[in-house]
Length: 356
Image (cartoon, rainbow, N blue to C red; front, side, top):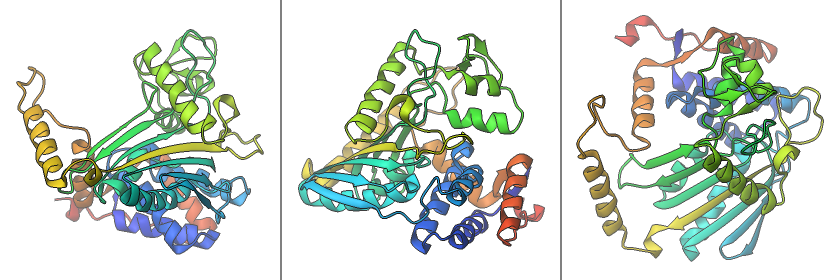
């Protein structure tokens, strides 16, 4: 696979979204979120999503320039109507307002409705961590997980994310799906004509499958069995019921060509201002001591290092800055065609001499 410079990919995204009518600020946020996902090795939520987002802008199933309504219901409660905009954009503006509120009151809870896919939840957790806030983020999504004991997808894969600052550019970032794997990885495998590992999913009859296409028609398996299904339900209540968004099978799938209704995805964020709970220096001393002691635990035979969540992502990002971002031919072809549609040339791959 060819490698591409991260700033060139961001510029391509920004220019494309700008030509479609997105503001400079919002296109920068979307481009940064997508390419950052690629840099961190989360390709399922990266630039490969740009073609489907663009398609939904063009057929008006996603509002490229939403009138986002931010309502402060109390000094620590923010309720947001995203006006069917892209989730990255809605969540970014909501998080900025939530940070301002949390800095004032110590906490902020943000309930968002009428949104769409927002990429990686970790992106928004990092925004808060940069301001020395703890962030917990949730989102629902189109049906992907069957209730425990069922064979038909009902809950979304419903990710949960946490972000904790650590006094440097190495925050603790925990971002996990309540399914055994993010559904985006199965979508990517289907697009690339690849099989998926055993234990990821069942088909529409409830039987185990390694076919990505059959898995998309069936159900991803929940993380940890019944426990993962229970977590998916909790996220569904927070993001769908409490926010006033869609929930369960009512959340629409942006990949469904027959669908005409808005997705009405719901998000929920909780922000905590550390300084309102404990002296910031004491917090940083304690969390770094915790991580140091954790990493010093005797390692299992097959383990070369104990890493805390977020370390791998950061190292992947550093490697990507130096070596470039790999794009599979299937994704590359879609992006090139998308660029041609708007008369925007796709960036040239990095030269091999830059990889040494």
